[in-house]
Amino acid sequence: MHRHYGVIIKCFLSALIIGTVTQLTSTAGFVRWAAAQGNNFSSSYWTIVKDRWHTDGLTTFLICMASSLIIYLIIRKFTTQQETAEKIITWSLIPITLIYSVIMYPNFSDYLL
Image 1 (cartoon, rainbow, N blue to C red):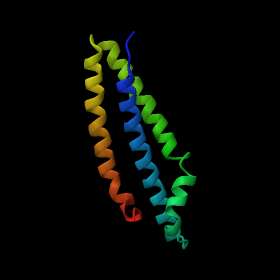
Image 2: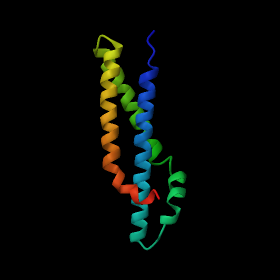
Image 3: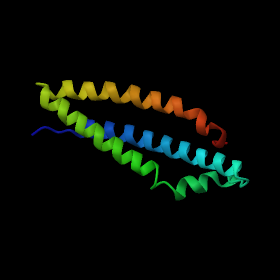
């Protein structure tokens, strides 16, 4: 029996980072939209992030987690060794997560103070 704990943890962490970044970005977009409408929610940014986690961040987390595990299982099916599939998924998740986080960071960086 093959143990896939390492890959599951890597997929979980990657999906958690992407979900958190998505949540912070979508809340920042809402705060900017509300400010354009005349409502200032800047002071309650973190409250909104916590209250609306299940709508944006959790959804993105679940989609990323499921898709990365499915992709790993597909790669595992077509490779002869489990280590090869683990390396492929690891070296694809790290750059994707890093690039996504770096691209999205300016969208919510003003609210991190």
